[in-house]
Image (cartoon, rainbow over all chains, first blue to last red; front, top):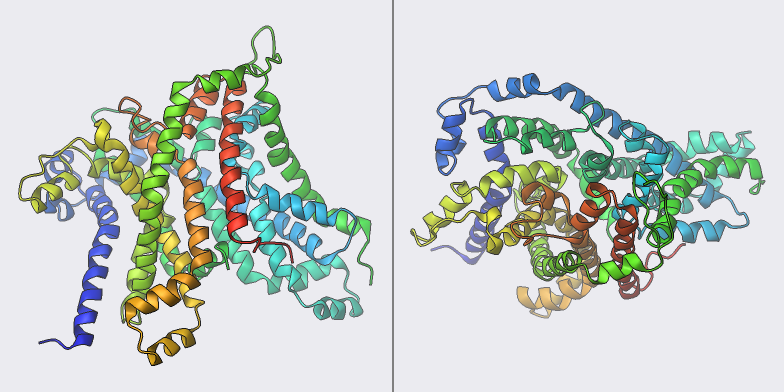
Length: 278
Length: 294
């Protein structure tokens, strides 16, 4: 007979393992299907446990994806759009936050309240007029239409502002005595000290931009500027669906990010905590 | 020390201010203005005209809009309670001091870092009439479950999308709850131990009240997400079958983008924003302005 402690542990582990299976099987299914080179075998196995242990294994689906579409181009588009937005966003948002937190000037409170109010506006509420604006600017089907509107972000400004406002004044006063100007204080004192919060902002920005779907769907046409999320549309119009190829595409898009976040998980966990209410 | 040098302040603020004005404030104001016009993405020969409340009149009589809105509310009523309680359960589980807690935590949050469009495709395959979910349900019911074409049946398509959305999103709320749990001082639980409280009493009298703000935040943010529901609908059902998964966002997309009717799309957007605004103000009210400027 188990004692109370062992029984409790047993129950907890059982529940956690069942949940583990629920959370993990779709991804495992994606991986095993992507590695099944034979489309008939995929359809034959699709409803059984054998789907997870295909009798044939190969990378044919992956090479198919590269052959049938410019996958490398889509990957580059996604990476370029995401990384440019994050880098410019870190600079622009932290400068704004630093300015609001470290200076007193007329209109400061108005700007702060405006930034807070803007946090309520979801992207979907401005997508339609933004489509009109970017169309008038002649930006449709380009990189900038997917980058420039998403650089400044009120929520990230707010997160950084909260950090800078608690930043001890003595540090910058010491820097000023040493002859530093405000740009040097921002760049050499404030930036290095705010690495954790900058990392959080970068993570949130990454997730937002990497997963973006509605906007690139509306503003891109051909393959030239399409990110991975929207380029996947090619598969949706085809019948019968080639599930092996689809899964290979999805796996290549998903797994690197999953692995990255598993490695950076402590940072991710603290980022989510920061984005929630304290 | 000079804290009011206009050039310096201007340099720090200008880039973000210009971008926010051009790509947030301007389109936001334009949504209101355009909603009173017949603006189209590609203007017709007579250009754009002021048409008063015509778009809003059309909206009131637009069955597809009301159907979409009804589905959004339906999604909120079903998904928000399930997702919130499941997230709390997961957070409590991974907060136990067990050897593999961190391992399980990792796997519970993995879906939240995936792109919705990608996992929606994987789940379409799982929901196939001959797919894994059907055969699993047939197996555990001993053959009673006959198998259904989830995404092509009016009765099952929306619940199927709901289940998948919970799977994808719950890990994020779990992490928020986990942060909330770890902020509860352990002395509270120790005091309860001395008083002889059992686990359920500790949960009811310490954990739940201490998590009140976190829970409010999770409920409201999940509700807002429910109104923004779009990607998985477009990928898995495109609003079908027979409009059974149609949502407000899908309607806005179809009107503004596919029919190029910016004016009507803007009117829909304004109504959509007012709903979000009400929910957000409710959140600020319930949380007592915790995010007020320092």
